[in-house]
Amino acid sequence: MVAKRAVKAQAVASELPATRQNADYLDYKKNENSTQTKLSKSYDASVGFAGSQGSASQMMPKAMANIGKASVHGIWSYQGSKNFVDHGKVYASMGDRAQSVDPDSGKVLWSRVPGKGLLTPPAIVNGKLFVGSDSGGFHALSAKDGAELWSVPLGESVSFQPAVSRGRVYVVTDTGSLYCLNTGDARDDGWLMWGATPAHNGLPQ
Image (cartoon, rainbow, N blue to C red; front, side, top):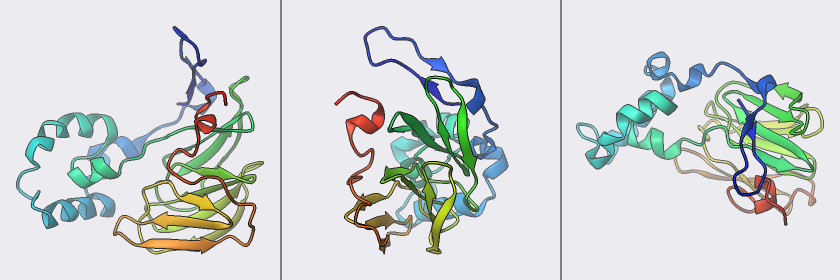
């Protein structure tokens, strides 16, 4: 569920009930045999975490209960449903679904499942949302209505939010590849790092 909070001392967070949804993707028991979970365990094993996760082992029970992860790689790569603000609207990826919400009314303006797999947090520029997925797909969506503008099958799992600069989208995969995608529009610019700017996190400029 998405919540909002004013940017002032002692402000109280309020939930937006229309954004409530099931989050089976956070249930470790339901996902412990998934391809992504097995892959994360193999990555752990490749760097010596097969039998013991070292000091990280103390975090595992809490990580399993709260974010559905039980590997160092899984915890490291977890991004969650990070919300971002653009032109007065809130955008987020929740599981396999991207959505836009009006923070004043709490109304869900649109909600889309662009493909298969869990989505990265969106990068938002030029009226577009750019999201990757753990199934290897990459999608450009319209910020206005969520319609898919284009997609690219990268074939490698993506967990991290992309960067967008000067008509190019930079995507890092979980296996360490770096892709540069030409969007064909030089106005696709301004999301140069994870989280972009304070304004995209709802802070006044």
